[in-house]
Length: 418
Image 1 (spheres, rainbow, N blue to C red):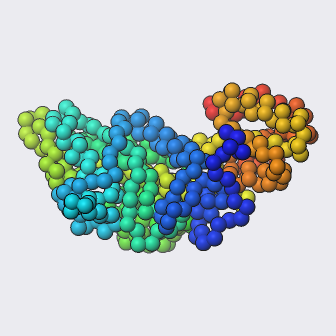
Image 2 (image 1 turned 180 degrees about the vertical axis):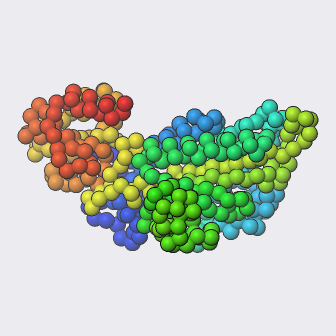
């Protein structure tokens, strides 16, 4: 992609009235635009990042047997009334049609997916079964804040599973938690598995995946000597300074954290509400055990920016960056440099490298380099009179640059992929 043809552009100054780093940098770097509080348009740059996060999540869900579906955003009120959510879920957007019928905009999909599963699960032989989708959700927030980390419209992955026995559910539950940790590891994030209340979904203890961040809304206590972590907003058993209940080697420390995922043991709440039954090995009719597993795709994008940035801009982890390379032509109008840069762009793209080529002839070298830092692609490559037939290569996360041949750069990029 050539920068001169890119739909969105960077801003010279940070936007006003931004309360978090992710909001400020994503707008200034041209990844999002705010439509209203809590609702954003994702530009081509922003959508590339969302899609890459989604793909990593998709791959890990497929590995544990999840099958992808796509469920609707608008639900009849009858589904939510059957589960009790119509009157209990205070963040539910409710709509009335011209014919007087009531509808809800999806804040979750337990009601819809259980109705779907009832058509296909009849016997213990039909389980375990798990399906997922990546879809937009809505929350009627009183005060949307923290940029794309807490919106009124947001992108999520939901996976749902059904099991004939609690033991079978427990096996899958462990697999799902492990898959979540792999997702966040691939994203470059360290997520703590945190005990929390199940809230409106279940009376059982659930698990949240929290990333330490001052922009987060969760108050957690954690141990630095092991992986123990607890959300103190829901569970009041432990306090700052208590001995770690898991390892006993350190005191519990407070921190702010951002939730990026959660897993719930729903038990039989929804299968009973929607009369989803199966015949077991003894010929008896029973209700399956159900679980749900969520990852906030757009929220994770915001957390990544909060985690990986410096005073100059975003530093995207390689797996989710909009482009692998930002190629910058610094020629001062030199036809020779421009031709050389075009040749490098062609060589990189033909080798399968994703390149954002800043080909703007009227923009100064300083402005181009500032934009490269702001956008935050992992590798910056400069073609100039000084580089000759070589290119100047610098990682966004490092200060020093190196001169090298293009074929050497390609080898290094291939090594990183492997």
